[in-house]
Length: 471
Image (cartoon, rainbow, N blue to C red):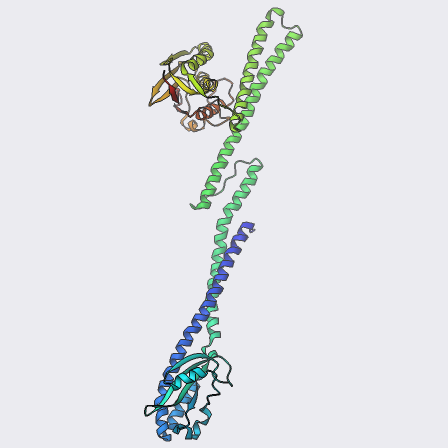
Protein backbone atom coordinates (compact mmCIF):
# COMPACT_ATOMS: atom_id res chain seq x y z
CA UNK A 1 0.00 0.00 0.00
CA UNK A 2 1.33 3.41 -0.93
CA UNK A 3 1.81 5.77 1.97
CA UNK A 4 0.94 9.45 1.86
CA UNK A 5 4.65 10.31 1.86
CA UNK A 6 5.22 7.89 -1.02
CA UNK A 7 2.38 9.40 -3.06
CA UNK A 8 3.60 12.94 -2.44
CA UNK A 9 7.18 12.11 -3.43
CA UNK A 10 6.11 10.15 -6.51
CA UNK A 11 3.65 12.80 -7.70
CA UNK A 12 6.18 15.58 -7.11
CA UNK A 13 8.89 13.75 -9.04
CA UNK A 14 6.50 12.81 -11.85
CA UNK A 15 5.23 16.39 -12.15
CA UNK A 16 8.77 17.71 -12.42
CA UNK A 17 9.72 15.09 -15.00
CA UNK A 18 6.59 15.61 -17.10
CA UNK A 19 6.97 19.39 -17.05
CA UNK A 20 10.66 19.05 -17.92
CA UNK A 21 9.92 16.69 -20.80
CA UNK A 22 7.12 18.96 -22.05
CA UNK A 23 9.39 22.00 -22.03
CA UNK A 24 12.18 19.99 -23.64
CA UNK A 25 9.84 18.66 -26.34
CA UNK A 26 8.52 22.17 -27.01
CA UNK A 27 12.06 23.57 -27.23
CA UNK A 28 13.26 20.72 -29.43
CA UNK A 29 10.27 21.20 -31.70
CA UNK A 30 11.19 24.82 -32.38
CA UNK A 31 14.90 24.16 -32.55
CA UNK A 32 14.40 21.38 -35.07
CA UNK A 33 11.94 23.55 -36.97
CA UNK A 34 14.49 26.35 -37.09
CA UNK A 35 17.24 23.95 -38.16
CA UNK A 36 15.14 22.41 -40.93
CA UNK A 37 14.06 25.85 -42.12
CA UNK A 38 17.70 26.94 -42.34
CA UNK A 39 18.57 23.77 -44.25
CA UNK A 40 15.66 24.26 -46.62
CA UNK A 41 16.67 27.86 -47.28
CA UNK A 42 20.15 26.61 -48.21
CA UNK A 43 18.54 24.18 -50.65
CA UNK A 44 16.43 26.99 -52.14
CA UNK A 45 19.55 29.15 -52.50
CA UNK A 46 21.33 26.32 -54.28
CA UNK A 47 18.36 25.79 -56.55
CA UNK A 48 18.28 29.53 -57.33
CA UNK A 49 21.97 29.41 -58.23
CA UNK A 50 21.24 26.44 -60.54
CA UNK A 51 18.29 28.18 -62.22
CA UNK A 52 19.84 31.65 -62.75
CA UNK A 53 22.44 30.71 -65.41
CA UNK A 54 19.83 28.81 -67.43
CA UNK A 55 17.35 31.67 -67.06
CA UNK A 56 19.93 34.17 -68.30
CA UNK A 57 20.53 31.97 -71.42
CA UNK A 58 16.77 31.79 -71.96
CA UNK A 59 16.71 35.60 -71.90
CA UNK A 60 19.06 35.69 -74.90
CA UNK A 61 17.77 32.62 -76.71
CA UNK A 62 14.30 31.09 -76.08
CA UNK A 63 15.59 27.76 -77.41
CA UNK A 64 17.08 27.13 -73.91
CA UNK A 65 13.62 27.21 -72.37
CA UNK A 66 13.18 23.37 -72.33
CA UNK A 67 16.27 23.04 -70.10
CA UNK A 68 14.88 25.74 -67.84
CA UNK A 69 11.47 24.06 -67.77
CA UNK A 70 13.00 20.68 -66.89
CA UNK A 71 14.97 21.99 -63.91
CA UNK A 72 11.99 23.98 -62.61
CA UNK A 73 9.71 20.94 -62.99
CA UNK A 74 12.21 18.70 -61.23
CA UNK A 75 12.48 21.06 -58.25
CA UNK A 76 8.70 21.32 -58.15
CA UNK A 77 8.36 17.55 -58.16
CA UNK A 78 11.19 16.75 -55.72
CA UNK A 79 11.09 19.66 -53.25
CA UNK A 80 7.69 21.25 -54.03
CA UNK A 81 9.57 24.41 -54.92
CA UNK A 82 7.52 27.02 -56.75
CA UNK A 83 9.24 29.55 -59.04
CA UNK A 84 8.02 33.10 -59.73
CA UNK A 85 9.56 35.79 -61.87
CA UNK A 86 9.20 39.50 -61.35
CA UNK A 87 10.41 41.17 -64.58
CA UNK A 88 11.08 44.70 -65.60
CA UNK A 89 9.14 45.67 -68.71
CA UNK A 90 12.09 46.05 -71.07
CA UNK A 91 13.23 42.47 -70.38
CA UNK A 92 13.23 40.00 -73.27
CA UNK A 93 11.84 37.38 -70.90
CA UNK A 94 8.51 39.16 -70.94
CA UNK A 95 8.14 38.14 -74.57
CA UNK A 96 8.45 34.40 -73.82
CA UNK A 97 4.89 33.16 -73.82
CA UNK A 98 5.64 29.95 -71.91
CA UNK A 99 6.80 31.93 -68.83
CA UNK A 100 3.43 33.54 -68.35
CA UNK A 101 2.29 31.27 -65.51
CA UNK A 102 5.48 32.05 -63.57
CA UNK A 103 5.33 35.82 -63.85
CA UNK A 104 4.13 37.88 -60.91
CA UNK A 105 3.55 41.60 -60.46
CA UNK A 106 4.73 43.97 -57.76
CA UNK A 107 1.28 44.23 -56.26
CA UNK A 108 0.86 40.49 -55.94
CA UNK A 109 3.90 40.12 -53.64
CA UNK A 110 3.09 40.90 -50.00
CA UNK A 111 6.58 41.85 -48.84
CA UNK A 112 7.32 44.98 -50.88
CA UNK A 113 10.55 45.65 -48.97
CA UNK A 114 11.97 42.29 -50.01
CA UNK A 115 11.13 43.05 -53.63
CA UNK A 116 12.96 46.39 -53.48
CA UNK A 117 16.01 44.76 -51.91
CA UNK A 118 16.22 42.08 -54.61
CA UNK A 119 15.79 44.63 -57.43
CA UNK A 120 18.60 46.62 -55.85
CA UNK A 121 20.92 43.64 -56.24
CA UNK A 122 20.61 41.86 -52.89
CA UNK A 123 19.66 38.29 -52.11
CA UNK A 124 16.86 37.81 -49.51
CA UNK A 125 15.68 34.96 -47.34
CA UNK A 126 12.45 35.22 -45.39
CA UNK A 127 9.63 33.22 -43.88
CA UNK A 128 6.02 34.28 -44.26
CA UNK A 129 3.18 34.59 -46.79
CA UNK A 130 4.51 35.15 -50.32
CA UNK A 131 1.63 36.52 -52.34
CA UNK A 132 -1.91 37.73 -51.89
CA UNK A 133 -3.17 34.42 -53.24
CA UNK A 134 -0.98 32.26 -50.94
CA UNK A 135 -1.45 33.25 -47.31
CA UNK A 136 0.18 30.19 -45.68
CA UNK A 137 3.61 30.45 -44.10
CA UNK A 138 6.30 29.98 -46.75
CA UNK A 139 10.07 29.75 -47.02
CA UNK A 140 11.17 32.32 -49.61
CA UNK A 141 14.46 32.99 -51.39
CA UNK A 142 14.80 35.95 -53.76
CA UNK A 143 17.75 36.67 -56.08
CA UNK A 144 18.22 39.33 -58.77
CA UNK A 145 18.20 38.42 -62.48
CA UNK A 146 20.90 40.19 -64.45
CA UNK A 147 21.57 40.65 -68.15
CA UNK A 148 24.81 42.25 -69.30
CA UNK A 149 25.35 43.66 -65.81
CA UNK A 150 21.86 45.16 -65.61
CA UNK A 151 19.15 43.86 -63.25
CA UNK A 152 16.16 42.92 -65.34
CA UNK A 153 14.04 41.28 -62.64
CA UNK A 154 13.86 39.05 -59.62
CA UNK A 155 13.71 35.26 -59.24
CA UNK A 156 11.67 34.01 -56.26
CA UNK A 157 11.71 30.38 -55.08
CA UNK A 158 9.31 29.45 -52.31
CA UNK A 159 7.99 26.29 -50.62
CA UNK A 160 5.29 25.86 -47.95
CA UNK A 161 6.43 25.40 -44.34
CA UNK A 162 4.49 22.14 -44.01
CA UNK A 163 7.00 20.64 -46.39
CA UNK A 164 9.37 20.53 -43.41
CA UNK A 165 7.28 17.57 -42.17
CA UNK A 166 7.10 18.93 -38.62
CA UNK A 167 4.42 16.41 -37.78
CA UNK A 168 6.91 13.61 -38.32
CA UNK A 169 9.52 15.49 -36.29
CA UNK A 170 7.08 15.85 -33.40
CA UNK A 171 6.18 12.18 -33.63
CA UNK A 172 9.87 11.28 -33.59
CA UNK A 173 10.48 13.44 -30.51
CA UNK A 174 7.49 11.92 -28.73
CA UNK A 175 8.59 8.44 -29.78
CA UNK A 176 11.97 9.04 -28.14
CA UNK A 177 10.63 10.97 -25.13
CA UNK A 178 7.84 8.50 -24.38
CA UNK A 179 9.99 5.49 -23.41
CA UNK A 180 12.43 7.74 -21.55
CA UNK A 181 9.54 9.28 -19.62
CA UNK A 182 8.13 5.84 -18.83
CA UNK A 183 11.55 4.59 -17.69
CA UNK A 184 12.00 7.72 -15.55
CA UNK A 185 8.62 7.14 -13.88
CA UNK A 186 9.55 3.51 -13.13
CA UNK A 187 12.90 4.59 -11.65
CA UNK A 188 11.18 7.32 -9.62
CA UNK A 189 8.61 4.83 -8.38
CA UNK A 190 11.22 2.50 -6.93
CA UNK A 191 13.37 5.40 -5.70
CA UNK A 192 10.38 6.90 -3.88
CA UNK A 193 9.57 3.52 -2.35
CA UNK A 194 13.18 3.14 -1.27
CA UNK A 195 13.01 6.43 0.63
CA UNK A 196 9.48 6.06 1.97
CA UNK A 197 9.62 2.41 3.08
CA UNK A 198 12.04 3.04 6.02
CA UNK A 199 9.86 5.97 7.10
CA UNK A 200 6.80 3.72 6.99
CA UNK A 201 8.65 1.08 8.99
CA UNK A 202 9.70 3.71 11.53
CA UNK A 203 6.12 4.90 11.79
CA UNK A 204 4.96 1.36 12.54
CA UNK A 205 7.79 0.89 15.02
CA UNK A 206 6.89 4.17 16.77
CA UNK A 207 3.29 3.01 17.08
CA UNK A 208 4.45 -0.32 18.48
CA UNK A 209 6.77 1.43 20.97
CA UNK A 210 3.89 3.71 21.93
CA UNK A 211 1.95 0.56 22.84
CA UNK A 212 4.81 -0.70 25.01
CA UNK A 213 6.63 -3.02 22.58
CA UNK A 214 10.24 -1.80 22.87
CA UNK A 215 11.71 -4.66 20.84
CA UNK A 216 10.77 -3.11 17.49
CA UNK A 217 13.70 -2.31 15.16
CA UNK A 218 13.98 -0.76 11.69
CA UNK A 219 16.20 -2.46 9.05
CA UNK A 220 19.14 -0.25 8.05
CA UNK A 221 19.55 -0.72 4.30
CA UNK A 222 21.71 2.28 3.33
CA UNK A 223 24.36 4.70 4.57
CA UNK A 224 22.54 7.86 3.51
CA UNK A 225 20.49 10.22 5.69
CA UNK A 226 17.53 7.82 5.79
CA UNK A 227 19.82 4.97 6.84
CA UNK A 228 21.39 7.17 9.50
CA UNK A 229 17.90 8.08 10.74
CA UNK A 230 16.99 4.40 10.91
CA UNK A 231 20.19 3.67 12.86
CA UNK A 232 19.50 6.54 15.27
CA UNK A 233 15.95 5.27 15.71
CA UNK A 234 17.22 1.79 16.57
CA UNK A 235 19.64 3.27 19.11
CA UNK A 236 16.76 5.21 20.64
CA UNK A 237 14.67 2.03 20.76
CA UNK A 238 17.52 0.22 22.54
CA UNK A 239 17.75 3.04 25.10
CA UNK A 240 13.99 3.01 25.59
CA UNK A 241 14.03 -0.75 26.06
CA UNK A 242 16.82 -0.47 28.61
CA UNK A 243 15.03 2.40 30.32
CA UNK A 244 11.84 0.36 30.45
CA UNK A 245 13.70 -2.53 32.09
CA UNK A 246 15.24 -0.09 34.56
CA UNK A 247 11.85 1.41 35.29
CA UNK A 248 10.40 -2.02 35.98
CA UNK A 249 13.40 -2.87 38.17
CA UNK A 250 12.98 0.43 39.98
CA UNK A 251 9.31 -0.20 40.63
CA UNK A 252 10.13 -3.68 41.91
CA UNK A 253 13.06 -2.47 44.05
CA UNK A 254 11.38 0.63 45.39
CA UNK A 255 8.15 -1.26 46.07
CA UNK A 256 10.15 -3.81 48.01
CA UNK A 257 12.16 -1.18 49.86
CA UNK A 258 9.06 0.82 50.72
CA UNK A 259 6.96 -2.18 51.67
CA UNK A 260 9.61 -3.66 53.95
CA UNK A 261 10.01 -0.67 56.32
CA UNK A 262 6.29 0.08 56.23
CA UNK A 263 5.51 -3.53 57.19
CA UNK A 264 8.05 -3.42 60.01
CA UNK A 265 6.85 -0.07 61.33
CA UNK A 266 3.21 -1.15 61.16
CA UNK A 267 4.00 -4.40 62.97
CA UNK A 268 5.95 -2.61 65.73
CA UNK A 269 3.23 0.00 66.27
CA UNK A 270 0.51 -2.63 66.18
CA UNK A 271 2.44 -4.72 68.72
CA UNK A 272 2.81 -1.71 71.04
CA UNK A 273 -0.86 -0.73 70.68
CA UNK A 274 -2.06 -4.30 71.36
CA UNK A 275 0.32 -4.73 74.27
CA UNK A 276 2.17 -7.60 72.64
CA UNK A 277 5.48 -5.75 73.04
CA UNK A 278 6.28 -5.14 76.71
CA UNK A 279 6.84 -1.55 77.84
CA UNK A 280 10.48 -2.32 78.59
CA UNK A 281 11.10 -3.27 74.91
CA UNK A 282 9.04 -0.55 73.29
CA UNK A 283 11.92 1.93 73.05
CA UNK A 284 14.05 -0.62 71.25
CA UNK A 285 11.33 -1.32 68.69
CA UNK A 286 10.57 2.37 68.27
CA UNK A 287 14.26 2.93 67.51
CA UNK A 288 14.11 0.24 64.84
CA UNK A 289 10.93 1.79 63.42
CA UNK A 290 12.64 5.19 63.33
CA UNK A 291 15.56 3.69 61.42
CA UNK A 292 13.23 2.05 58.91
CA UNK A 293 11.38 5.32 58.37
CA UNK A 294 14.72 7.08 57.83
CA UNK A 295 15.60 4.55 55.13
CA UNK A 296 12.21 5.07 53.52
CA UNK A 297 12.71 8.82 53.63
CA UNK A 298 16.11 8.45 51.96
CA UNK A 299 14.61 6.51 49.04
CA UNK A 300 11.83 9.05 48.58
CA UNK A 301 14.27 11.97 48.82
CA UNK A 302 16.41 10.41 46.09
CA UNK A 303 13.43 10.16 43.78
CA UNK A 304 12.41 13.75 44.54
CA UNK A 305 15.98 14.99 43.94
CA UNK A 306 16.17 13.27 40.56
CA UNK A 307 12.78 14.68 39.57
CA UNK A 308 13.90 18.18 40.59
CA UNK A 309 17.15 17.84 38.61
CA UNK A 310 15.43 16.59 35.46
CA UNK A 311 12.77 19.31 35.55
CA UNK A 312 15.27 22.09 36.34
CA UNK A 313 13.69 22.89 39.71
CA UNK A 314 16.77 22.13 41.80
CA UNK A 315 18.69 25.14 43.12
CA UNK A 316 22.40 25.36 43.84
CA UNK A 317 23.39 27.81 46.60
CA UNK A 318 27.03 28.28 45.65
CA UNK A 319 29.66 29.82 47.86
CA UNK A 320 33.12 29.12 49.31
CA UNK A 321 33.19 25.73 51.06
CA UNK A 322 36.03 24.24 53.12
CA UNK A 323 36.51 20.78 51.69
CA UNK A 324 37.87 19.30 54.92
CA UNK A 325 34.52 19.99 56.61
CA UNK A 326 32.68 18.09 53.87
CA UNK A 327 34.98 15.08 54.24
CA UNK A 328 34.59 15.11 58.03
CA UNK A 329 30.79 15.25 57.81
CA UNK A 330 30.62 12.34 55.38
CA UNK A 331 33.14 10.32 57.40
CA UNK A 332 31.07 10.66 60.56
CA UNK A 333 27.94 9.49 58.75
CA UNK A 334 29.50 6.46 57.06
CA UNK A 335 32.27 5.21 59.37
CA UNK A 336 29.89 3.26 61.59
CA UNK A 337 28.43 1.37 58.60
CA UNK A 338 31.89 0.57 57.27
CA UNK A 339 33.07 -0.61 60.70
CA UNK A 340 29.94 -2.74 61.20
CA UNK A 341 30.84 -4.63 57.99
CA UNK A 342 34.41 -5.12 59.19
CA UNK A 343 35.88 -2.65 56.66
CA UNK A 344 38.89 -0.44 57.28
CA UNK A 345 38.05 3.24 56.75
CA UNK A 346 40.93 5.47 55.69
CA UNK A 347 40.94 9.26 55.06
CA UNK A 348 44.13 10.99 53.85
CA UNK A 349 45.58 14.17 52.31
CA UNK A 350 42.75 16.50 53.31
CA UNK A 351 44.18 20.02 53.50
CA UNK A 352 42.10 21.99 56.07
CA UNK A 353 42.77 25.26 54.20
CA UNK A 354 41.49 23.99 50.83
CA UNK A 355 38.37 25.88 49.72
CA UNK A 356 36.20 25.22 46.67
CA UNK A 357 33.21 27.00 45.20
CA UNK A 358 29.94 25.10 45.45
CA UNK A 359 26.90 24.21 47.52
CA UNK A 360 28.01 22.72 50.83
CA UNK A 361 24.94 20.51 51.28
CA UNK A 362 25.14 19.22 47.69
CA UNK A 363 28.88 18.59 47.99
CA UNK A 364 28.20 16.54 51.11
CA UNK A 365 25.48 14.64 49.25
CA UNK A 366 27.86 13.91 46.35
CA UNK A 367 30.65 12.52 48.51
CA UNK A 368 28.18 10.63 50.70
CA UNK A 369 26.58 8.93 47.67
CA UNK A 370 29.98 7.80 46.32
CA UNK A 371 31.22 6.55 49.72
CA UNK A 372 27.87 4.91 50.50
CA UNK A 373 27.99 3.13 47.12
CA UNK A 374 31.53 1.89 47.91
CA UNK A 375 30.45 0.53 51.31
CA UNK A 376 27.36 -1.04 49.79
CA UNK A 377 29.39 -3.12 47.31
CA UNK A 378 32.36 -3.98 49.51
CA UNK A 379 32.14 -6.98 51.81
CA UNK A 380 35.79 -7.14 52.88
CA UNK A 381 38.88 -4.96 52.72
CA UNK A 382 38.84 -1.19 53.04
CA UNK A 383 37.41 2.11 51.87
CA UNK A 384 39.80 5.01 51.34
CA UNK A 385 39.12 8.70 50.70
CA UNK A 386 41.89 10.94 49.40
CA UNK A 387 41.83 14.64 48.51
CA UNK A 388 44.65 16.50 46.75
CA UNK A 389 45.34 19.36 44.36
CA UNK A 390 46.27 18.24 40.81
CA UNK A 391 46.46 20.29 37.63
CA UNK A 392 45.04 23.31 39.43
CA UNK A 393 41.90 21.43 40.53
CA UNK A 394 40.74 19.48 43.55
CA UNK A 395 40.92 15.75 42.91
CA UNK A 396 38.92 13.49 45.25
CA UNK A 397 39.33 9.72 45.00
CA UNK A 398 37.18 7.09 46.65
CA UNK A 399 38.65 3.61 46.37
CA UNK A 400 37.17 0.32 47.54
CA UNK A 401 38.17 -3.34 47.42
CA UNK A 402 34.68 -4.55 46.66
CA UNK A 403 33.12 -6.62 43.96
CA UNK A 404 33.90 -4.16 41.17
CA UNK A 405 31.92 -3.38 38.02
CA UNK A 406 31.93 -5.32 34.76
CA UNK A 407 33.46 -3.47 31.81
CA UNK A 408 30.25 -3.63 29.77
CA UNK A 409 28.29 -2.14 32.69
CA UNK A 410 30.56 0.90 33.24
CA UNK A 411 28.83 3.15 30.63
CA UNK A 412 25.46 2.51 32.28
CA UNK A 413 26.13 3.13 35.98
CA UNK A 414 25.19 6.81 35.57
CA UNK A 415 21.83 5.96 34.05
CA UNK A 416 18.77 6.41 36.22
CA UNK A 417 17.27 3.26 37.72
CA UNK A 418 20.39 1.23 36.84
CA UNK A 419 21.21 -1.17 39.67
CA UNK A 420 23.71 -3.41 37.92
CA UNK A 421 23.55 -7.06 37.00
CA UNK A 422 21.95 -9.66 39.25
CA UNK A 423 25.46 -10.84 40.17
CA UNK A 424 25.97 -7.64 42.14
CA UNK A 425 23.90 -8.92 45.03
CA UNK A 426 25.07 -6.77 47.88
CA UNK A 427 21.93 -7.37 49.87
CA UNK A 428 21.67 -3.60 50.38
CA UNK A 429 18.70 -1.43 49.44
CA UNK A 430 19.23 0.01 45.98
CA UNK A 431 17.07 2.35 43.91
CA UNK A 432 19.52 2.95 41.05
CA UNK A 433 19.30 6.73 41.52
CA UNK A 434 22.30 7.61 43.73
CA UNK A 435 25.00 7.76 41.06
CA UNK A 436 22.64 9.40 38.55
CA UNK A 437 21.95 12.22 41.02
CA UNK A 438 25.64 12.43 41.89
CA UNK A 439 26.74 12.92 38.27
CA UNK A 440 24.10 15.62 37.69
CA UNK A 441 25.12 17.51 40.83
CA UNK A 442 28.84 17.31 40.03
CA UNK A 443 28.28 18.74 36.56
CA UNK A 444 25.99 21.45 37.89
CA UNK A 445 28.95 22.69 39.98
CA UNK A 446 31.35 22.61 36.99
CA UNK A 447 32.97 19.38 38.12
CA UNK A 448 33.63 16.00 36.57
CA UNK A 449 33.31 12.44 37.87
CA UNK A 450 35.04 9.34 36.47
CA UNK A 451 35.20 5.68 37.39
CA UNK A 452 37.70 2.88 36.89
CA UNK A 453 36.75 -0.64 37.81
CA UNK A 454 37.18 -4.29 37.02
CA UNK A 455 34.89 -7.06 38.12
CA UNK A 456 36.28 -8.64 41.30
CA UNK A 457 38.99 -5.99 41.77
CA UNK A 458 37.17 -3.06 43.38
CA UNK A 459 36.40 0.41 42.00
CA UNK A 460 38.02 3.84 41.92
CA UNK A 461 35.79 6.93 41.67
CA UNK A 462 37.55 10.21 40.89
CA UNK A 463 35.85 13.60 41.27
CA UNK A 464 37.28 16.91 40.04
CA UNK A 465 36.22 20.33 41.27
CA UNK A 466 37.59 23.85 40.54
CA UNK A 467 39.52 25.36 43.44
CA UNK A 468 38.19 28.60 44.93
CA UNK A 469 41.01 29.34 47.35
CA UNK A 470 43.81 27.64 49.28
CA UNK A 471 44.05 30.30 51.99
